[in-house]
Image (tube, rainbow, N blue to C red):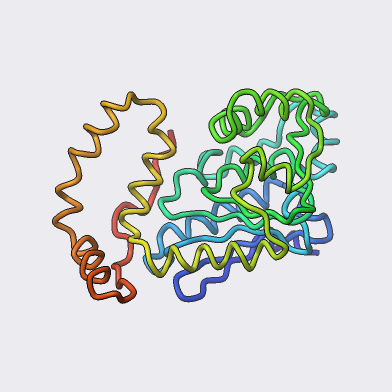
Length: 269
């Protein structure tokens, strides 16, 4: 059984691959998997050599949602697993990691699995992947921030459809609605290629700042967003990464950006 190691982490030349690894359960979500996944992302956060992160699932499945054994327990106890409170990182932690996350999705991606995919910055799915919010069909609210994530990513109309019906839809429809960025017959290869391009050609400092803004900018007016960015632009204009970005462009060569420096722990609220 893979429950002893429900998440795998591999780093190759600046690209980390985080694999949900309970293939005998199609990578169904457990508290142990959440702890392992968040821990792997924390390791990536703290490793300056990691520039981009691919998130995938083992055995041709991303994550079909919460493990049915856990769901059965919850129906009996009327509460969630108290062990979840012992996980250091907040539930929205993946969205705070200052490095781009690219999800590679095959097979089922539902419930908490879909929420985790939506907390990635880019998503590549097989056309035959199967998605569902599922919550309404289990007698649950839209947990794990699913309503906030979907409305932000695909708009209110599609979010109402997918959350209220809980229906299953494939990767092709997911791409049409913007639930995923694109489809590919080999999502892992395509997601890795995207992550490799980010790692090789984009400044980690720039990506961290842009990602942080993208996850919060809609709470601001346009004028405020411009003013806040203008307030820090001189720091970037004076940086080695900016000089290298311009020089590599002018010299028509790949850039050599420095690793991401800064705090190693995210805010928990």
